[in-house]
Image 1 (cartoon, rainbow, N blue to C red):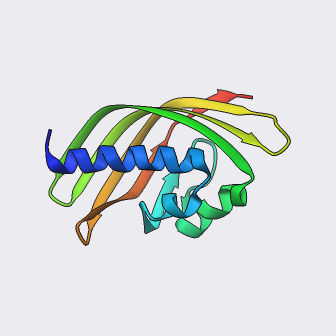
Image 2 (spheres, one colour):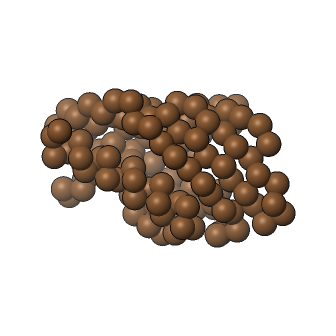
Image 3 (cartoon, rainbow, N blue to C red):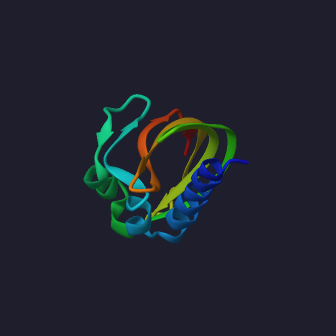
Length: 126
């Protein structure tokens, strides 16, 4: 496996672990400042600030798992197709589970990979 592919796999592992630990700052460090998240039925979420606001300031418990299907690297750009399952539990205890495919674009900045664009196709029920 190529060094860049390994680095992207590690980024995804770190993202999932930090999300489950409630460490929003660690997750924010893994994305570009101008990141864009495309979500079904919702407007795009643009930038780190919007992402941080959506995290509920640590008031959400997150459980997540991913199954990477494909990673392709093209110089300082890469994409990853990942099957993801996420359960989010707010303080009121009403869990929402979503699963599906995610297509992510990564960009290498100053030697480190960062999430640049993310097309999230997760669907599910409460």
